Image 1 (tube, helix red, strand yellow):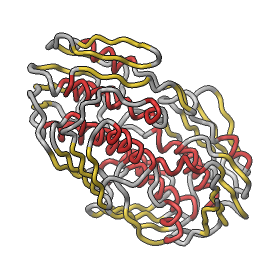
Image 2 (spheres, one colour):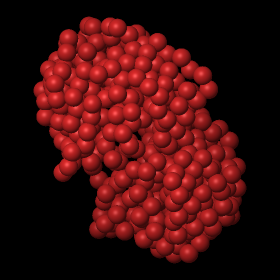
Image 3 (cartoon, rainbow, N blue to C red):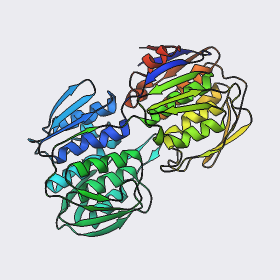
Image 4 (tube, rainbow, N blue to C red):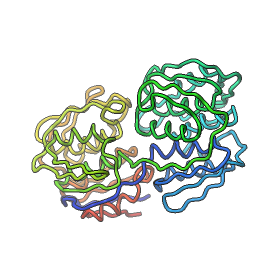
Length: 416
């Protein structure tokens, strides 16, 4: 099994381009099933998760062509309405196939996603939203079997904000022959780009980018070409790498307006940040300052950046409090950081980080995607050698991570 070995203590400097968003690409790829023709998506990152989604689509009968970061999917001959378990089990995001399959075929069968290392992520709100639109839902043998019996107009309010729940409901509503309203919707950029794509495909949607959307569906989705968003979490991860190593980085092909919450925290920590167009330039301070942060749905601080900022705060002057409100088990990187000399304690949903003068290299075990990135960041700053085990998690969400860090002056290699 591959490992990443890092000789820490080198300030990162240079310029890199940000890859396409994983969290936006997956629902856009899934949406192609709802189109009785060709969908072309640009700026698709080459990741394990996007590869798994393309494998699922191919197995269901779609013709997939990929040239670098451009993916064309012709779903004209897709007749399979069941997503195969052998593929679905590898990726929780496969649940976003429910909406597209219901939109096109009025029936769908997808395995329940279950829990994962960072906590249980139920899909109850997806199913309640479907039921409000006239879908009969059954759970049989671990599969969700959904059938649209008689579509209904009306509205549905999500009890809590859910990104994939909003996406699934939005896709089905966009295919109904009448108006349907969704309330307390997720407002993430990944939701917004999907809504704008549905409009390109023929739906009418009011309130895009807000908690309330009114959707007037269309009888059949038109073929579309769309450009995927830059990955805001990859952006934040490399900015955090500059912070923790005392470096200076220029990130190109990103979207700064999607990064405001963590850019604000980095400025509070002492960073100098300049934004011009799609470029962010960050210069780390000589002394990192402590900050408190709380994860929240967009436009709040993203849970997917919590671990990376925690790594940086390990070396900040003073005490920081990090409160996690999205996932109940997302501090699994804390024991590994403490093995490297950090001083972190956990009480309930909060982690208390007392800054230390230095981190020390050690063998550490990654538990999930963002925890893996956190431990790599810690290794970049640590004195000595850090060995990060179970790095296959990184392949799910970071394109060419080792190569990009090497280009910035890191002493890092993948061994396996």
